[in-house]
Image (cartoon, rainbow, N blue to C red; front, side):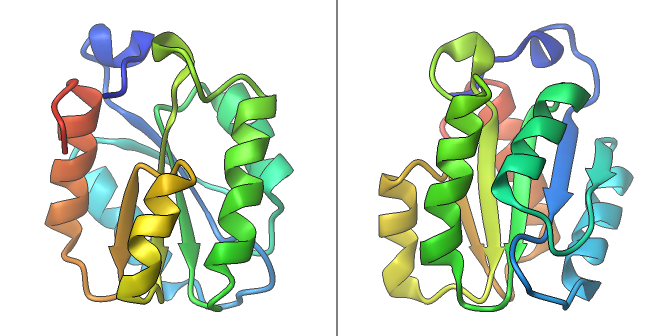
Length: 147
């Protein structure tokens, strides 16, 4: 599914995590950052209250394989299309060598999972998802398997 120069060279996956919008709750994303680091991934955490353009620019600059967005505010259906567009504008979505995996987690109702995937989100992780499931999803996606 996702093919990057980094994953082909067997380097540790680089994951950028951020909180879009005005959501001020960051405990969960910090737990995820720790779990990904413990799994051998390099993690860049941009923090809270960042814009989609800031995330996409940082993803390009940091040469990441994965962008993970945490949203607990319920604004995922409004913010994630902006994130997909920003990644496309920065050349991080599309061809196999420039495709950065996009994940979203947080307070996401079951009915929003498929629409998020249809708009271009690769993985959706509602509250309560085990961190090991996220690690497995990332590894599978970066190795070319269908997660």
